Length: 430
Ligand SMILES: NC(=O)c1ccc[n+]([C@@H]2O[C@H](COP(=O)([O-])OP(=O)(O)OC[C@H]3O[C@@H](n4cnc5c(N)ncnc54)[C@H](OP(=O)(O)O)[C@@H]3O)[C@@H](O)[C@H]2O)c1
Image (cartoon, rainbow, N blue to C red; front, side, top):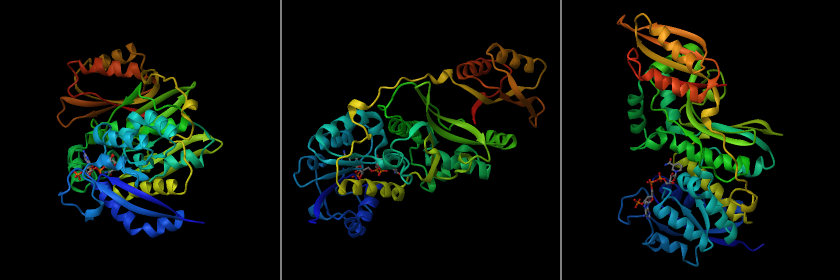
């Protein structure tokens, strides 16, 4: 059988792009053997030609204007490694598809924002749009959803989807250091970017769970009614309290179908300390799927960094090299559903509430009055004295209560004069 030749263009040669280019060059033979094709790394492009990089770029491969790769006849596959949901990455991917180039991208922001439009465009132009590297790089969850679990009826998909947050929470738990100290170390070790905002505030995990839930529930990527909370409010004292109570604090991304409605949330919560997900530590990611007929299915691996991301990018390229046009979200645009959402504020949870208070008469009854007014009943109450006898920390574990009632009660409590620090509240996931 005659081998087909594919020409590749890589745009973006930063943290991921440089490592990926090196790996692809070293492993070219292996990829060609496994896919029975010939591959040519034809063009490379980035913003600044004279930037010092870990790789040397052959002059013949450099393209000054990155958008030119979308027009070149001798380009079959474009690998977009610029990042960001707007600007150059968006232009490159939209134009590439319009000019009938296959696309491989690691860009979760772009796919979560424009995945519906891009998927439709790829379908009508009969090209592949692959994005395994956009979600939990070292965990090939997208291919598993598209192929291994193809006809499973999934009702819940959740997990730890941000390695930086998980690293920080794990280190806080092991070391007794506070949030800012651990974040500083994480930056020094390269586990957190210099601007880790979207990792810490939950936005990164939000993009990932949007993509996963679309694949799991055969629906369009849903952008409304998503609850997004980060890890910034976690204090060392909450980590220690969780341990005493038999829990661990983790940052989860959850998508679930209830009464045929979609619930999506990203939040920090307490989980039983001997559960599987509570023991996913460091930069590891994990995804759990509940479906039929598979039952409970779990995958774990490193979520980010050049190695795991490159592994996912190569897998996407090989999928294209093997042939066939695959629909980006497995089913045709006309068969994807618009799904109704359920407002997260209407969900019920048991919760952990920590209130630092003035230790004086009437405080406890002031607290219970607000809780009972908001229909929150107390399952457990612990009072810890501060070193200075004037203050105390009250920890409340509530029975299952409506999310909106808990947030209302917390807001009312925050305004009370006897509260000395901002109240802390974490849901308890079962
Ligand atoms: N870092 C991770 O661990 C990780 C994990 C999974 C997925 N991803 C995704 O991978 C993608 C790349 O991330 P990264 O960490 O490699 O980013 P990065 O280090 O900031 O690299 C971005 C690259 O894009 C190039 N670029 C920026 N603007 C451009 C423009 N206008 N025209 C042409 N090139 C331009 C830059 O060029 P210069 O080099 O000339 O400045 C740089 O080479 C993102 O979508 C990210 O979300 C990253």
